[in-house]
Length: 205
Image (cartoon, rainbow, N blue to C red; front, side, top):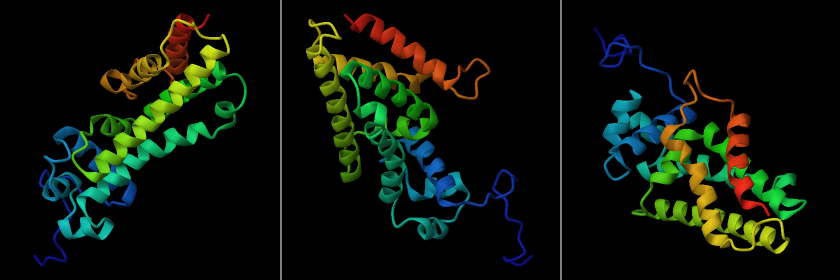
């Protein structure tokens, strides 16, 4: 059988999938999370995707470019929240609650990518960039907490930086247990409401 006529199947016997950039990023995010960025080779990505290494290089120039694109899928929508009208208008406490609820929605929509974002260690330029962006987002939340305390809407005995970390920790903990395909999975809106109610009922004056 010629190479051209050989069936395009994976070693498992399943048909070899057709890949576009988005599907490749899905695979990369999963493999990077499972094995760590340093522990993942282009050969690992080739096996996981069913693409040859030469085909991988058709989509990206390097493994680190794949990492950067995957992390941008988590970072960009988080920072887009800040520019939304409900995040930039009104009382600080309402803007804070809105941002936290939207962060829950982004996490659930981009779960593999946010999981990867929360697992990077800072060993490469791209990982350090991602950690810097996470810190920038933390600062936005802390500033909203400080403003809400100044407005008298949050308890005055709270430390803004600690409160911001605890709020984001509550949201980020979803990566450990939230499974969107579970029969018991709640709607994203209901999940966001549960988290914000739990948090803000204890924070408000």
